[in-house]
Length: 189
Image 1 (spheres, one colour):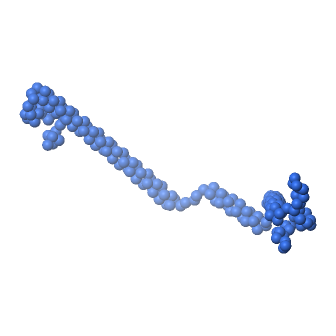
Image 2 (cartoon, rainbow, N blue to C red):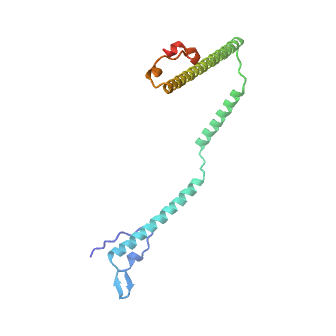
Image 3 (tube, rainbow, N blue to C red):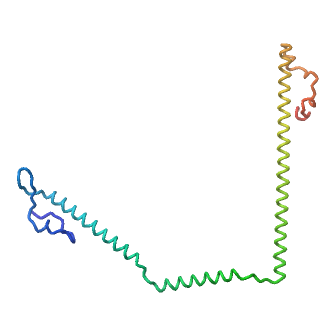
């Protein structure tokens, strides 16, 4: 029968390959183990060996990473970046020198911008006040109309209760004017 076992792994124990067919004890005594059981043992051994090799590689990699290596090109780049930052900081700390006419133009432009901003703020404020007054006026008209409707309903019920005729409901308003109710003639029409 041909040998169907997997080849030996690097660092694997020689006990699976050097010995003959393995035996196992049971109640009945000694008998040879099946090929499947041997393969399972071999695969388990490979698994353990691979896990150990991976752990060793990780430990080695971590140690290698922790040791910084000197790189002269990177050091030159770092020094140049530091020097550039220092130069920028020095230049930004220096006072700005301008001719007097340029300075006057800048100041005039700033004053114009400030004036424009104040004008825009004033216009917005006026618009808000106008909208607020329009809203209050609208609410006032709504309240007057509600009062008018309530008064009309009150008069209708009064007329209905005093006489059971339809003329009392849909007839003359009994001399109540729009001014007494608080409504303008335009609103009534």
